[in-house]
Amino acid sequence: MRAAILRHGMNAWPPFLFSGIHITALADDYRHARVELRRRWYNRNYVGTHFGGSLFAMTDPFWMLLTMHALGRDYYVWDQAADIRFLKPGRGTVHARFDLGDDVLGTMREATADGGKYLHWFENDIVDGEGDVVATVRKQVYVRRKPDRRNGSPGA
Image (cartoon, rainbow, N blue to C red; front, side, top):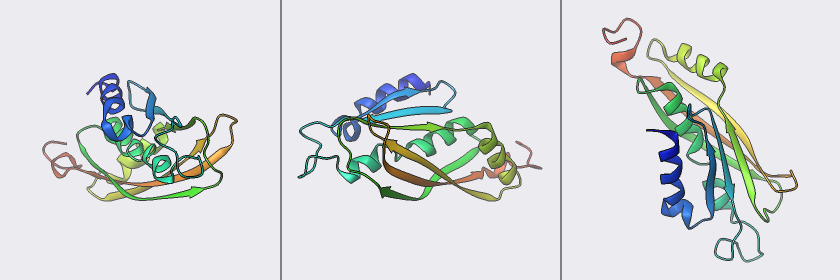
């Protein structure tokens, strides 16, 4: 799927649309994404800051999606684990960046060439308009090469 179509579709997806989450960039090669969470009257908590669940939701699918699209159809890619550390109340518009490097993809390909699984931890920050870190999110992604695409397989 073209990245622009996925970006527009996800921006219209009710869990993002009604939470104020907006994908502002998704690279054609699926190596970069930028996501914003805009504070609105309908998505702030009792004390006027972003809900913690919304902060997490704005980051939730991206490492898996970027990895899955960058590696291609020869791989299984799943979210395995996650955690979030809240550092400062989120006010105003906050954003998160995701940059998937060639070194990480190379490690994944090498580690799974013979069918083994590979677990990789990604980490990124959610940052406010002043550049302060509001929260740090870690996501563990599971990667395994599909059986018919492994080294020594006829389809490989």
